[in-house]
Length: 176
Image 1 (cartoon, rainbow, N blue to C red):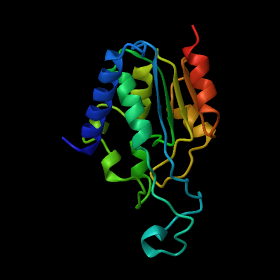
Image 2 (image 1 turned 45 degrees about the vertical axis):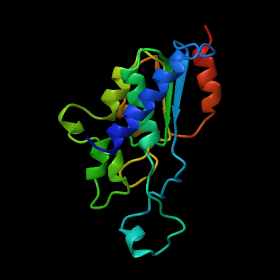
Image 3 (image 1 turned 90 degrees about the vertical axis):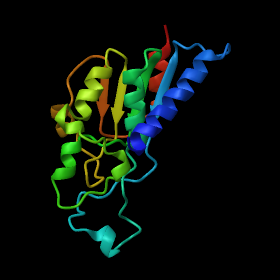
Image 4 (image 1 turned 120 degrees about the vertical axis):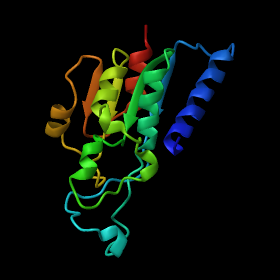
């Protein structure tokens, strides 16, 4: 009943359409959700975006692409692999600061009653999952140590703080 739910419905509709096409293998679909918003510096402590102190270096995150990719892979059986880049590492990180740079359309209503992003990633496995360049509620890249504590160590889940070659990773996952 919110924008994220409507976008997920649209994505699932596109996937259903792709499965009807004779030129698409419906069991070999991979999904890549990405954010094109640059991350903020870890030194961003005040609500500088609203004060416009340095508007060229503070950004709001765009985690919806990564979230939609994860949720589509969770609900769709025909998805072979999923890559999520630039998504929010955890909804709980939005509560660590008085300010959040996460758009409200990327918040799943009531999600923390049942789980968080790490739970969605874990439930998506055994499909191969790449979760990289995750940000916190202030749109700051989450370091490798923190990501390691947040995400389960499973062989089908690749978690990395830096941006890598997603296309190469997806190709490697789709080889028989």
